[in-house]
Image: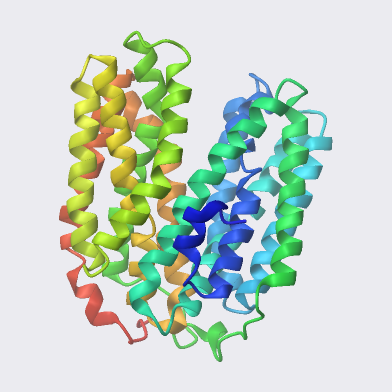
Length: 394
């Protein structure tokens, strides 16, 4: 379920069974997680902007709600609840007719969409509590497995889209509900942490300053990644690439990521996360600037594949770092707060690209600048390690 084949078995064979089961659940769900790319198509040209805006805001709220639920429920319960709610909301969206009903259904999908994300990160943190050295491997395996599953999901979308965009939504709903059933059957029940609902000593929880700076760094990283992923195909076509090449480049990157991610994590396994992320984001920034400046299509494709390889090595580093640094009682809130960086980046990237001129070159320049901001912001989070094991003052 995690990807199949002897290569995958070699990667996962020595991981805890619970970790493999959780990765399998997320991979199964990811096979249908292609509807986001077609929300605008489903909503139609008149509603597209509203639909994407409603979904973005609701998904950001969903991430926070997932963290709050973890204060009161066990991770497996939140994962099953989130997947079931997402599947049910998807079925409502497939059946919705009329502008207001479509927007309401999209809002429900967004509110359910990220509920299970903090629970996934928290569950993996608990599973690897006794073997911190494996956390990077486990989180990295989750990230690269989801990339590979996304490539398969793209092929499913290519088959289903000619039938109708609503069938995409139905199949996505089915994968959510099947993943929820598999999670209920195979994930081990975990107790709610004693006193989890009293995070921060009963007062209002406030993220510590270093966590805020770490989230700023994560937001810059997310902006860089989204700018590349959203505009690289457009940049290739602008520079004369044949229409089949962007899809082939994306598929090649998805196939390359599990291999380079596995070997990269093995080589860098003994290093702390902060320096790896700092050096890695510098390399990502330079490759993005190369794509922005290069006019030759082969150079752009080579730089993009190299970018994807380096990005695969960094997969899971952010989550593993949060898992190691967060006080245990506050870890779900830390995951939810830091995870909101992607929700913030999603509407921010188009604005930044518009300010940069709107062209594909401007988008890749934006990506390069965002990546190069990360090391300086990470350097400001060094006091974070001193917070390990202490509760945050409300």
